[in-house]
Length: 390
Image (cartoon, rainbow, N blue to C red; front, side, top):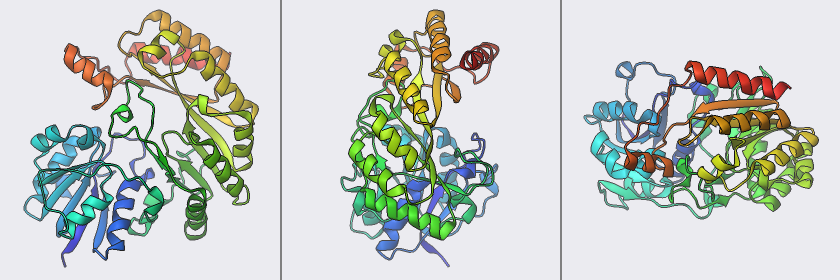
């Protein structure tokens, strides 16, 4: 029996545990389709090593979520699906490079933005199909239903590996409570105009979703995957007061300059065990080149505030950013000696499509991509590790 819609999450085998990250965007899309009584299923191929051997269900429409890392696998999927039904490719990569995606991948439709409503209208023939369709952004996130987690295998919803910051064996999942980021870091796709309008969900609705996850799936730990979890302090504080009685632990990512001691105290009482901060570098000069709109001093103060609240800190650092010098790296090592985060991750700079830096590199014609773990990378990571222990 042919379904009306099949939504597909392409392979992401470059991730350590691909199926630990439930594709919430597809879950939201499916929930909106179900509200309109549209027959839908989700095919999660995150850990699929060979998509040529996957049995594709018959459908009238296929919706594929595409990020830059899955562009080639998306292209393969579209070439297979062309004989089955109509293909729509959406997600971050096509949102920032729609014409290029349409030309390279060759689907029936490339859809940009937050596609829940426009995709529903296309499938139900309320919108006419065009090669490139612009969905825009959804203003009222509270109008959206909870993601259709029941369409996933349970292993896609609940993770026990510890990758979400929980102890190994503790049931955990991810939740998103806002969309967009108003900052414009030069290395980040979220600096693109398509993504820089920040909107957040009502604290009551978030609490209801968390309570549902605890009751229905036995979840005891949550990873909030918002770009900036504490950006709206009043909403965050309200949610923390509600979560204090929920007996859930959680981790989140945010900016150091959106925190204060009062909010962190509420977060600790609400179950926060770990906060992740995008530091990138301890060099103010390089922070300026990155357009981080902060300073090493503010970042250091934020890390200390988090630790003083009894919450662990994880910092994200970057190396090989265009224009970085040995002095910038030295300053980062010195910053780590002062900050002493509980954890850190070092990543090589990659020119993400849609970011200001990628546009600059394309114009300049330089190849700024670096291998993940060459000798210099490992030596620098070891210096940072030693500095954080000093």
